[in-house]
Image 1: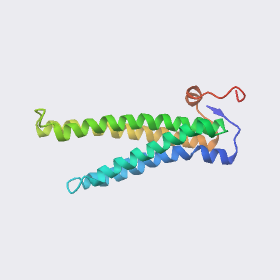
Image 2: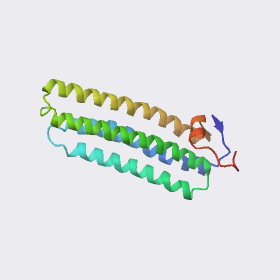
Image 3: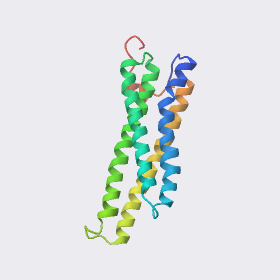
Image 4: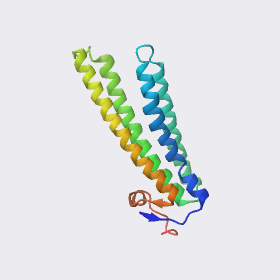
Length: 168
């Protein structure tokens, strides 16, 4: 882990996408998901709304990080934003793959010859894998946000997005 000479404004801006990803993970995928899950018997609208909010936030993170590559002068901010984008991309892939599998088994499991208990067990296992991934990403993002606040960059982030020659 290396300390970088940064201003308070740079530290604050470097935390922006980490905070957006944390909001998506904690508020959207834990609190709103539990609310939507309790209402699933009444309507699937809250679950669909949660998915739309999540994909929108992840898209925002990815677009802002890509935009920062061309327009952000500070390597420190770019590095933290690229790290947040990498994790957002990973989460988006995980969200889509596990979500599509869960929906396919939940609505099409009977057509494939599965009994109700097997469908419930399989979708529950997929949900458990997803929640473990969410909790792991929450820990990683809290650490990354703390590093951004302290003006630090981990060795893994530097290896993923090395500094330009004039900063090295």
